[in-house]
Length: 89
Image 1 (cartoon, helix red, strand yellow):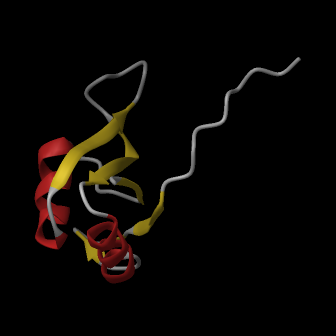
Image 2 (cartoon, rainbow, N blue to C red):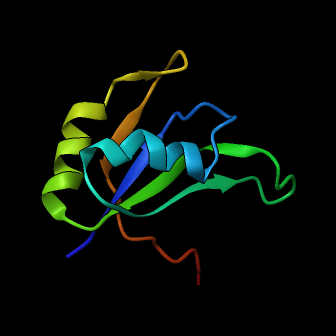
C-alpha cells in the first residue's frame, strides 16, 4: 500500500523532479509534486507531496528528513493528512 508524505518549507525553485530526487533515496517514489501558486503557475507555494510505493520507505523518509536542511531551509516532513473539503454551509 502506498503512503503520501507532506513536505513543507521547500526551496521555492524546487519542482517535482527535484522533490523526487531528494526522496528517492528512501525507496520507490510513485509520485512527487510541488504545489504551485494558482495565479503564477511558475512559482512554488513552498510545499509538496511525495507518494511512496511502500509504507516503511515513507516512514523512514519522514524520520530522517524532518528538520533536515535543503538549500538553507529546514524541511517539515510528515504523513499527509486527507484533504478537507472547504465547503462552509
